[in-house]
Image (cartoon, rainbow, N blue to C red; front, side, top):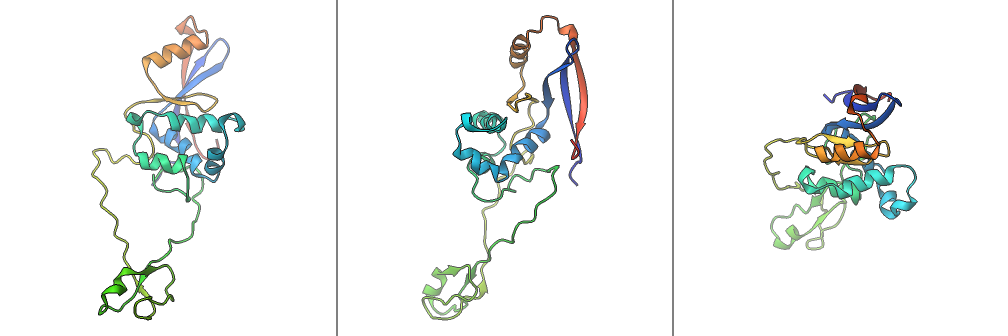
Length: 207
């Protein structure tokens, strides 16, 4: 059963009570990137980042520029950056209600096993006539997919859980490192690390 909440760590400047950035594991980052699987993903792809409203461009760019070292599956990444159909390939536990999609289209073949050419044709219509023998193609064909490669972690999602991720208030996402932290502290003009406080919050459906 999917978790109803996920924890975030906030780094706060206690003097100004300003949140500098958030730290999160892969669960929340996967959830954020999964937002791009909604129809807005197609719109974002067609727009330039300068035309995008709010922080969606930053979120899209964060995934686009994420080093492959931290990407769990390049195929799942492409489904978000270049969306074609509603995406559920990554099996990300969403905080949003699950949407019902139409059932996959069936594949049908001819049931005439005596003619070799009949096996060359398949159809999505169970009433279609076989071009070889003129019989109705109403035999259900089995779609056989290649076996997935064994994974040592079997994490699923879009990013790997090997590191913690930094999330900015403009939805820029990047892997956390000592250098990135020092860079951000310098950006926010933090001279005394003693003013920094760490707060942990839980994010769920209401938030």
